[in-house]
Length: 309
Image (cartoon, rainbow, N blue to C red; front, side):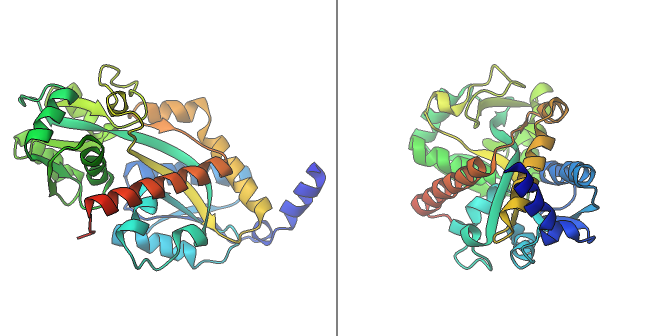
């Protein structure tokens, strides 16, 4: 059985080609998505003895890079590193130039990280319970990195699950939202742990809660929202996808190698320093995860009547 699988793998056209493997990323260089793609490229290059390149194609809420892979040949030479917007966009944009479920084969999740619910250091809101009391009584001015961002979706999920009232203030990215939060122009913000932790440790912001399934080891005193609202989960994640119809032996090889790269103690330690988690999944598990994410965010978009603009 193993010899037949190896023979099928070696016969797969993608491995017989000398063309480089390209990993497309729908965001600009820098940040966890880009870092994950570059670490993946380095590891795959060594394992496959192939040139593996990273191409950043930002724009249109990651749709440019995603469409490029959807239209590429199904031979394993064009991969996509995508995150939560991959699962959010089908509900948010009714006319995507690709079919998320039909056109892609999920390979493995690489990294995931929850968000921190943040308030200014001088805020009278001291904990999640107090925040929810306030948000059920009045509209809390809460910022986000933009419509459809995970910081936006997390607040909408909290509003839906907790019956909270939120006055959403969208920004063009996390940096200006953080600046206004520190300055007291908004009352609260969900932001990635890796960017928020330095300000929390400096005492300029206070973290009330974490959106992961359990507490973040980097801030163990900050409770998970799931402790108050069981099942609550809103994480930024990044995984790797290939074109659907790529031969199964090649998909299995790419998925196995990508997962192995991110399962090492060194990789886990690298991401843990930033409050994130290297969290690879097998192909079937990752496909289930993506489908679950699509269902959750479709419900949030529908119930909260979210539009992309």
